[in-house]
Image (cartoon, rainbow, N blue to C red; front, side, top):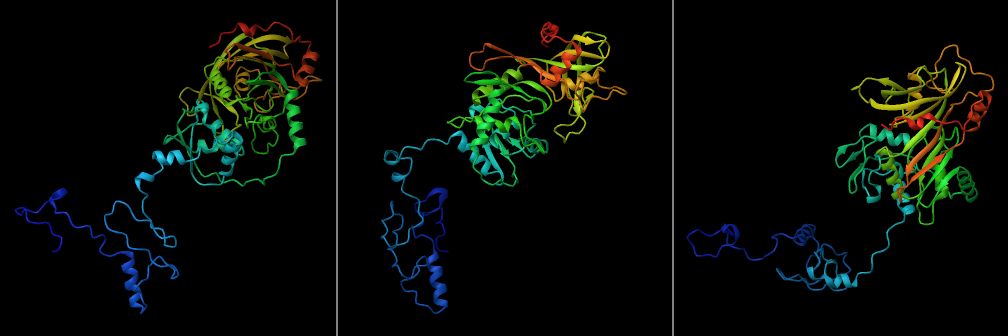
Length: 451
């Protein structure tokens, strides 16, 4: 058979594997040969026809076999699909000297716009940037996809549709720089691209500035009012996270949330002005370097004026982001440890008490669930107040009486403590006046342990 390797005893020169090298004759049947045979079967003239021509352009000269470089084709000849010579590749010195300087990277605003444009696309993979290190996975998605409702973000993570470095992630997992985040198809209807109203943006910015308790180049602390949601959800249109868009800087840097408060909880809310500040402040919360004090008006008066509440909490409905929390046992699925110190500051007979609360952990509805657990739910709490035959004293509004009174946190740049206090919201100020409570009274919770 032609091309069969010579006998081992012959003197033929062998190539790799013991076979004699065959002359470089190229493929036995080329695409051109096949096309010519097909044309001959149809009775057509195929003397000088190329399978890649439309009949107007002449065929280019045949390419010599085993030539180190292909000769330049005629201007009107079809381009051969060959790999470019190594000497002209993009990695050579000549190519680098002729290549233009790389364009500047996209701004934060352009990155957010690009991420939003992919909401309806298929599976995509995101890489965690160095300034996103330490972010929770759910907040990472919210920052990358601001159009995605937070409830949808939690649903994606909870159902296991998201992977970090190939592994299933939990909502509170922290990201490492360079990690690969696989995001599933985000099937959402894109809103119409409408220009943002300058008047509305100015109004939102003015409203937020009216809430500022502290501000510098890296962060600000807002006095969040009662009834204003921190993040969007089902049926929630106006929220702090959306309003922050009005404070986006010329460089595209948008202020971002560092932690959350319940919709009906008023008081101190920290906002980071840069992504680096957000990562640093988030680490302060995670390491419990931040100190928080809350004030509450509760039903009844605790027998132990100063105490400690340590339980495990779990959601009644795991699929509901705002579900009621209940006390669970250690080891129960989804249960997390929660620790709170409390102190009675003042009381009105045996009917009401002013409690100061210091949470060590930061679980959902922790203070509200713990107050109910010790038998003294917070006045106006629609989820946890279930005291039978209890009526609101005259003049006290049926609103949640819970205030994020004070926060002390290291500054993200200098590390020096920032100590900010929020005033009583109007409905709590009215109750304090009716009950004769003095907001300037000494708060014994400051002496409570930190762990």
